[in-house]
Image 1 (cartoon, rainbow, N blue to C red):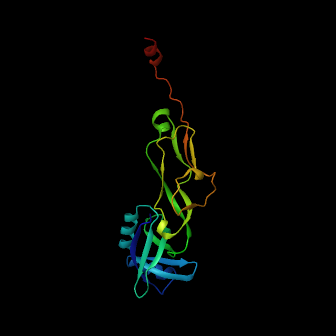
Image 2 (image 1 turned 90 degrees about the vertical axis):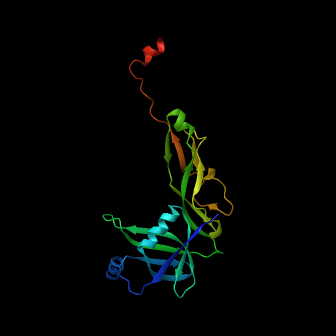
Image 3 (image 1 turned 60 degrees about the vertical axis):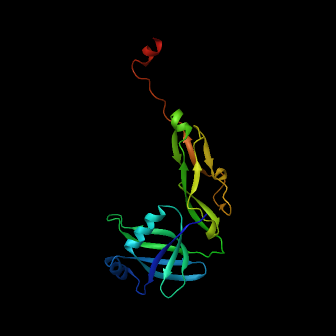
Amino acid sequence: MSTSTTLKVSPREDTGRSASRRLRKSEQIPAILYGKHSDPVALSVDNKAFIKMLRSIAGRKTIIELEREGSDKALSFLQEVQRDPITDRFLHADFQEIHADEKFEVEVPVVTKGSSVGVRMHNGILEIASHSVRVRCLAKDLPGAIEVNIAELDVEDTVKVSGLPALEGVEYRDHPDQAIIAILAGEAEEAKPGDAEAAAE
């Protein structure tokens, strides 16, 4: 179920704002790798390689193998990315280390499949109440996203955590009654001038 990608990273000794600014000027992104069983490790990532990786995973939750010179590969996932609100440049990346034989918890995106009958036929409005859900699983079972088929949903239908598709090896950690997707009633369409006359003819 899980897919993975590889990213080369380099260790960095200098930390702090000045060191981070120097890294960014050299087209590198300051990063950190942390986990339950090891101390945080300061890293740097090539900006172009990072952007290429983000495009390849396309918003899905993916296992990232960090290649470190002189060290074993580290399994991780991208926990957080900081961007400059003005320039949109990447400022920092956080990677969480995981182990292949140990379950972990992570937020996974929710994506919809199909077109709701309530939206198509009954003027309903699709509302995504939660764009992600928290799951617990092994690295090999990590889903890139939770796909929900909404084709049969009508107005006032709701998909809760308890109604999400069952995936082998994946445990949903959010409350079962938490709403994920709903089809709301839209405003009634106003009759156009002449409609009543046309109907009477």
